[in-house]
Length: 197
Image (tube, rainbow, N blue to C red; front, top):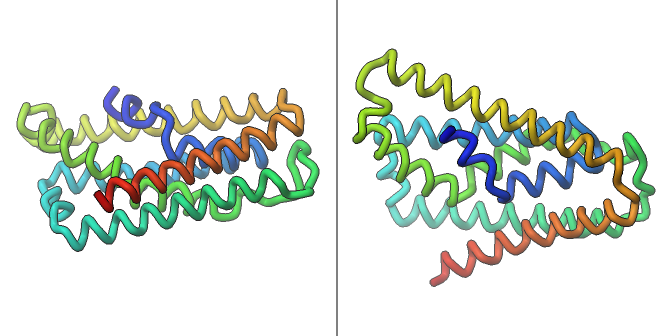
């Protein structure tokens, strides 16, 4: 439930999943989601073993924020640019969106300060309340549940985008692609403004 509650709200990974999945289908959408699991799992384990305080060090936190902003703005630009490309949107279109989808999902989740904050706050709470960290068996079952939840959500998102792709008119596809790119850009700009303030 914790994994799904973290994965389900719309955010940068969701926007990138939709953007790549609408153009390339199930495989690129799933690759973005699977890549994001790597980053989520990394922060989850860091929080679980108590290394979350590292992210409180200003240079580390600042570096992660700069990387996150740059990545989100770049992906937003790519999405908005792709909406205006002349390539006709077709089933299995001409543009290969599988290339880099996994890396893109992984980079977004590793550099996403929202994910860092989520896991650093909830990870300590899980250990403090005894949900995880009391015994190796208990921690292993929690980790298994978390991983199972993220994989379930990855397949749900990829299937949803795949079936949505079948009913889209090319102009609506371009509009959604532009909207996802703009949303990624807004996430980046908002993150930059929070970082500067």
